[in-house]
Image 1: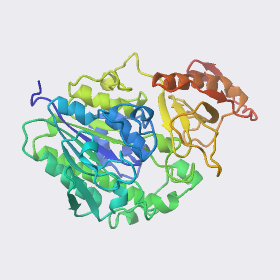
Image 2: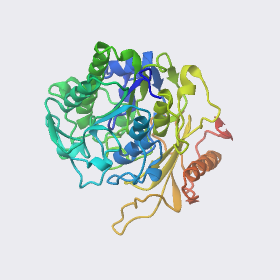
Image 3: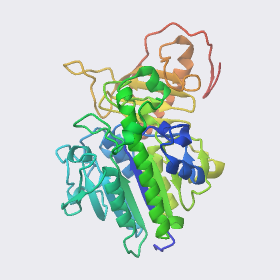
Length: 459
């Protein structure tokens, strides 16, 4: 039976935000003082990774606790399977009021704005759009309520959504609430291929130091980094406003706030767009949680996947975690704790740029791709494949910015063999068929000799 002792829960969800934009991850740009305080006083999930580095599929994973091939949304433009239960359904059943504000991106692409009531994921209260980037701009935010009525939110888009969230949490209610607040920022504005920060904010970060991968590889970062930073700064100010509202409403001590993002941004350095790759810039995301049960939780060093966050939220609310969820609650990891069944790697599915699969351990990253191409020579994007070829191998300890691809080097064969076994185990555990693999062509060996011992490497 639900009681008022159950915590309120807010998910503060950004779009396309790199983990290294936060001070908690080492940034010196002071973009995220509110996130940094949240990570310091609450729980910082330092090694947090998306399981699908593209918008719709990642969102389906966070709504369901399943991998994208399990939800049916393995590609942008797909809808959740009929009858698919989301976080809203689980919280509804536990007596919560559930609300959604912002970008949805879990409908076919011909649904730009209003999302039909039956496709709103079970949320009781709704103020959203399917493709917010296509129906709004930085100072022109339009969202639709659960009945399809249009609402124009004044001000910068981040502020309009934050105002709506504050109105939601300040409403009189008898039940605890679960609010999913989904921003489009710091995603690019599609029609202009630009990163529109609030007035004056882009200028603040003109000449701001680039992360090493972007400084080395360039891409669109020299043009877009200042605007991107300005958008993140305003998001963090919105997070601060939300905490201020919780404090003034006497809700701060009984509200869990989860901050995370769907994927990162490599600024056209790894392929011709912004994400859809195995690289840290694409898959490593900022994540922190604060509130009852998480305050003082410290820094979680274990590798955590996006699919671990739904069971974590349910567990924190005292709701039984469904057995079908692919992830695990991080609660046992707080305060330096352990969980014997915690995986040593995260598993990533990749679509659209190509059909790929990846595993990342604390030290190594191994990625494969389906070699099939279309008639015009573009990589085939499909749910899964029968056959993959080696694509990337990185030693993240020696090469954290992934500048040297080791795949095909003979002295790393044992590493590849172990990571491939891990990859197959993760694929088959969620219903994918065991594929065939093609070894990468052999390259000249590096001087560094590797002795591999089942996950540890001595160089």
